[in-house]
Length: 424
Image: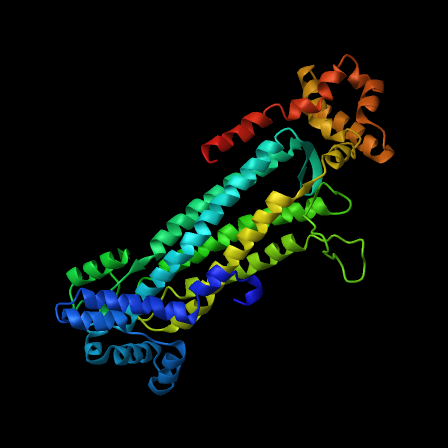
C-alpha cells in the first residue's frame, strides 16, 4: 500500500525486514525443537543474522526467495547453519511466518475496531434525544433521533469487530509438515512443538500450504468491516450536504476545503473512506481466486497475497482511524436538524393521521386517500398539514395536539439506545 494510506505501525509489520524476521523466527524455532543441533550450534543459529539487501542479492542468483534467505541465514550461522531449514519446505516458513505477521496486525487492528464501537456508543448516548428526520429512499419519512441512528452504527461496528476477531484467529495458523504435508522428513509431534513455541494454532491438513480459504475469509471480514465504515461515511456525507447541513466533518485550523472556492468545507475524509472501501471489496475477489490451487499446492496465490494482505489490512487500519476521528470530532447542528423537520410542513405526520382516521372508523384505503391528498397539498402549497386537516371535514373531532406530537415518534429512543449496554 502506498504511504499515504499506511500508518507506521502497519507499514513496519509488512516491511521486507519484518517478513524475513518472521521467517527467521520460524527457522530458529524449528532448530530448537530438532534432535540434531548441539547447544553451541543452537546459540550460533539464534545469533544468525540477515539483511534485506543480502537476501535480495542472493535471490538474483537462486531466483528463489526462501532459498536465498536460507542461504544467507545459514552462512551467518557458520557450520551450525547446516541445521537451518532441515526437513522443512518453503511453505512451512512462509505460511507460518505469515501467521506471525497477521497476529501482529490483529493486535493493532482489533483494539481499534473495538474503540470505534465505544466511540459510536458514546455519541449515541449523547444524542439519544436529539430529534432529527429519518429518511427512506433519501426522502423525509418520520422523526427519529440522531442517537438511534448512531446506535445502529455502533452495533454494526461490534459485529464487524467480532467477525474480524474470528477471521484473524482462523488465519493465524501455522504448518510445519514438509513437502505435500506428509511429515516425510519430520513428524506431527515436531510440528506441534514448533507451533507451540511460536504460540500458533495448527493447520490440521496443510497439503504443504495453509488452506487459502482462511485468508479469503479474513479478506471478506475486512471488506465487510470496510463496508460498515463506508455506511457511516455515506450517512455523514449526505447529512453534510448544503441543503441538509445537519452534521459536518471536523475542520482543522488552517485546513482548506477547495483550492478555488474558500467557502467550501467538503466531506473529503468521508469520501476517502467510501473510495477505499471499494478497494477492499475488490481484494476479496482476488483472495477467493487464491483458494483453488493445483493439487497440493502451486504458487499462483503467493504474488497475489503479497499485495492484498498488506494492502487490505493497512487500508482497514487507516480507515478505522479516519472514521474514529470523524465520530469523535463531527459537528452536529441540532438546530438545523429541528429546522429540517419542518421542511415537509408536517407531512411526515401522515401515518399518525392515517391511524387516527382508521381508529375512528374509516377504511384504511379511504383514510389513506384523504391523508395522501392533504399531505400533498401541504407540500405543494407550503401550508402546515395540521391546519389543512383542521379545516377538512375528515379532521373533525381529532385530537390534533396528540397527533402532531414529535415526542410520540421517539418515545422508545432511550430504550433502543439503552440496548448498547450489551456491547459497550
